Image (cartoon, rainbow, N blue to C red; front, side, top):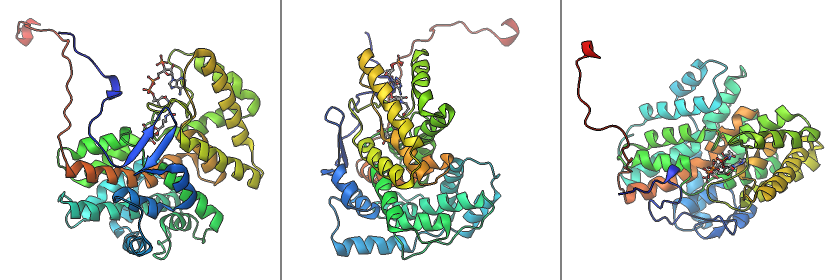
Amino acid sequence: MAQTIYPGLAGINIATSQIALIDGIKGELLYRGYDIRELADRVGFEEVTYLLWNDDLPNRTRLDAFSDQLSGLFALPDPVYNLLHSLPEDTQPIHAIRTAISALAAFDENPDDVSTENIHRIGTSLLAKFPTITASFERIRKGMDPVAPDPDLPVAANFLYMLTGEMPNAAATRTMDVALVLHAEHGSNASTFTARTVASSLTDVYSAITSAVASLKGPLHGGANAAVMRTLEEIGSVEGVERYVLDALAQPHGRVMGFGHRVYRVVDPRAIILKEVARHLAEESGDSKWFEMSLEMERVMDREMERQGKQIKPNVDFFSASVYRMLGFPTDTYTPLFAVARISGWMAHLFEQYADNHLMRPRLVYEGPRGRVFKPIDQR
Ligand code: SDX
């Protein structure tokens, strides 16, 4: 009997969820019913994480309690700082994060217990430690000592403070917060599905999150923001964009990074917000090269995809590349920045997975040989 195959599980529903609604036709993204545009405009990363991990936005008392919890969890165990120091200087930051997250399990007094209380404890600890690992390794690989986290700062400000050793200004903190809110959650994307799949064997949170970081790294997923910047650097100028795009699209299965999405058939609502953030940063900084190149790439891709009758539009990674560049981040830290935000969504989904678990075990349709006659090795 012919078996239906779903490459990449496209269109397959694995569970119900209360966390995010992604409407790929309308270009709408809701976090537990709140429109991403309103959340990006009005709340910070801690508030959005509380929303994703609970069933509604917190009141002031609950938000302060959550923030107080985080304040004591930013610091890493000394051996994990030592581990980061021991890595080769040219280690990719995303490799350093994946390694450090895995190592943290060894310093947790109860890593393997998947009770609701314990996975919440570990998740809160990881939410606080992702920015510390990322900022600390960024300084270590430049030959500088890590900056100890300031327990009185929220995640966005603390991350920037641990990167530079200086108190960030309100504008930089707000931009960082918007980027974290926009990247926090996005349904069963590849890295979140990876986390849910790993957790479905009832293994521990550290294993699931280490695997999620590994999946996020790929250029088809969270690695795309860095790939976009490398593309813009390779092209070098606005004048070179059209030729680049036409050459890329002329290749069999050619891809222009930062475009296309498994769900969105219109522009990713996060890209719309990040485009305006990039525009503002370009106007403020006077460094509009990357933003201008991005606008040209969007124009050419729109024209070419229209001509081909394809609904390939900018996704979250396209304008985030120029935003992070104008904020001064090195290109190979863009995917770690994505991870610093997405630990929030990964944990929200792990809470759902562990609470109503079914082992993930899809099937393969066997098309190999049958009934072969065995020959001893000397007769082969
Ligand atoms: C993220 O899932 C999520 O929610 C992810 C994410 C999140 O928040 O977690 O939103 C974050 O990962 C965004 C996506 C970042 N990746 C990129 O920007 C990489 C470039 N994009 C493509 O690789 C692609 O669009 C995917 C992987 C994102 C989606 O691919 P699909 O749904 O598997 O579709 P496909 O690759 O099979 O493409 C179908 C057709 C192609 O036909 P072929 O060339 O294979 O014959 O669509 C066209 C192409 O014609 N196409 C593109 C294109 N992406 C798809 N053409 C040019 N450039 C592209 N980028």
